Amino acid sequence: MKLTNGDEGVMELAAPFDMSQPAISRHIKVLEAAGLVTRHRQGTHRMCRLAPDALGEIEPWLDIIADRYRSNYNRLDAVLETMKPSHQGDD
Amino acid sequence: MPPLQLMLEGDADVVVTRQFKAPPENVYRAHLEPELICQWMASWPGWTMPVCETDSREGGAFRFEFDGGEEGAFTTTGEYITLTPSSLIVHVERMHMPDPAPDSHCHTTFEASETGTLLTLRMSLPDAETRQGMMDMGIADGMELSYSKLDEIAS
Image 1 (spheres, one colour):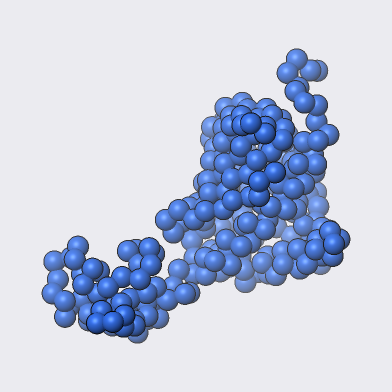
Image 2: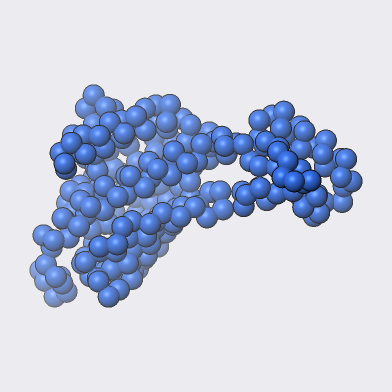
C-alpha cells in the first residue's frame, strides 16, 4: 500500500523488507505482469507506480458518491428551509 | 454555503463534509424521520422512495426502497448502532443487488458551526468486487443519466 502515496523508488520499496534488491525486483516484475504496477525511469532511479485500475476503479466510484451527496444535500437544504428554526418544545 | 468536500482516507474510507444553514437538531432529525428523509434522499429526478421506514432507536432497523422507473430500482437496509440526539448517528447499511452486498459502516456527526451545522460523514467503501457489481448493474449509468437531466433542469 506504500504506492498509494505516489511513485516510489525500488530501493525505498525494498527498505522495510528483509529482502535483497534482486528479490524485490523479481516481486515487482510479478506485480507488473499482473497489471498492478507500472515501472519507469526517473534519472538513474527505477520508479514504481500503481496501475490506474489496480484498486478496482475507485475514482469513478468517488465521483458517484460526491455527485450523489451533492445532489442529496442540495435537496436537504430545501427540506430544512421548511422546518422551523428550532423544534425544541414543539408538539 | 461552502461546497461539499470529499476525501479518501486510506483506500477504503471516504469522508464527506458539508455545511448547512439549519441548526444541528434539524439536520439530525432530517436523517431519521421518514417523512423528511423521503423528501431528499432519492436524489435523482424521476426517482422516488416508495418505502422509507426507520425505527430510530439504537439497534433499530431502517429500510429505504428507491424506484427510478425505467432506470431501475434498489433497496438499502441497515441498523442504527449509536444515536446521540442532534450530534451523532452511527449505522451500518447494505445495498441489495438483489443479494445483499457487504455492510458499509457510516459515522455521521452534526456539529454547531458559525453558519449552522457542519455535517461530517465517514463511511467505508464497499470492496472492489462489490463496487464493480454495482456499476455492472447500471446504477452508475442511471445516476449519470439523472445528473444530465438535472443539468438540463438547472440550466
